[in-house]
Length: 385
Ligand SMILES: *Cc1c(COP(=O)(O)O)cnc(C)c1O
Image (tube, rainbow, N blue to C red; front, side, top):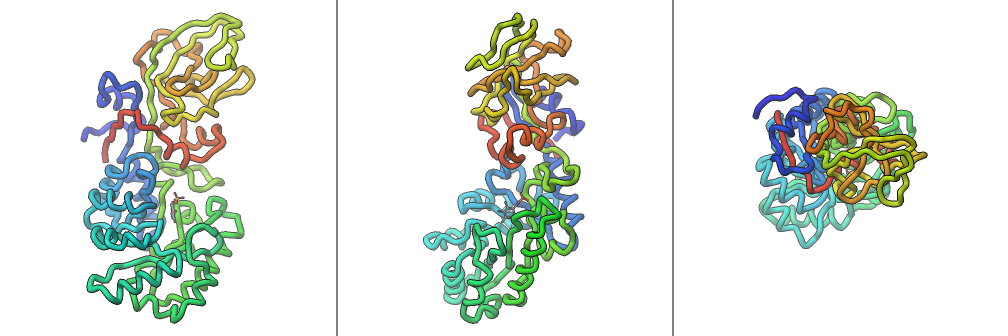
């Protein structure tokens, strides 16, 4: 693939998106791979996996998995069995872990695609041990232990009541004992150390098993949290993992939409549903081909009194005005030289100039939600690595 300057999403979609595309999503796989490498270096000698659940946080499971595999990633985590089966086609020889755990009637699917269940209840554990002892193909498993998240996982207390728990690692090919941090985005939170302490106690019950605790934010907590394998997701996709420090990752996804129409309104005129924005002076407007159906949150709407998110066009920022509707949104282009803004011109709604996490902050959510809600109407353009 051709090489492009990383900040040049506009030039890229101009060249690679068809003329009829009303909106485009550029995925910079070179940035994705650079982010993963940076995390792998920060956590070495621990192995660095990649979490590719939810369509690789919205950016596309197949291209993400293949690019990361080519960069050296050998372990992938997905949420569901369906996601795992899809991932197997992209990375035929990688380890694929299924975070949902084991659904009893799907044992044969795990076997057929050589998937690794993350066992999270005592019955799931018992069932996998049984199949490990009665079948000739002994398939590996991981165990999720709950150390304070209270979501999925065998609780640390429950584990001690399992008969001969210390023999579990010898009765099935146990690849990892795992747990998940609840507050790792805040390095000062005492729950991080508390969970690590509980995790170390749990590990003594399962001698010989390798260990995995850290998500993206956990990697930034430092070496004592890395163990044998780290499981970053959001940081690979350019999102902020740590709420305290500047985000060191490169943006991966750029959302672009075309201007469909421009117009000038006079003082007193209103814009959009509910007439929530009223012009206080003559204002030039542009209507963009993107709305909440595309994942641009309706709560990013702006009224006359509420300042809004901005989009980026050819070196200028243009604020959103009025309500975001299903397919369309309106921006104020008064500050942009007239010759630069006309129908078909691209606006960046999120990317290197409008950062994912700034947009998320404005929408009252997190980068994870913005990414995973990117809609299906975008023409997707992948470049690199
Ligand atoms: C989603 C998930 C991750 C990845 O978390 P990020 O915060 O995106 O790095 C890691 N481990 C488990 C169990 C998860 O569910």
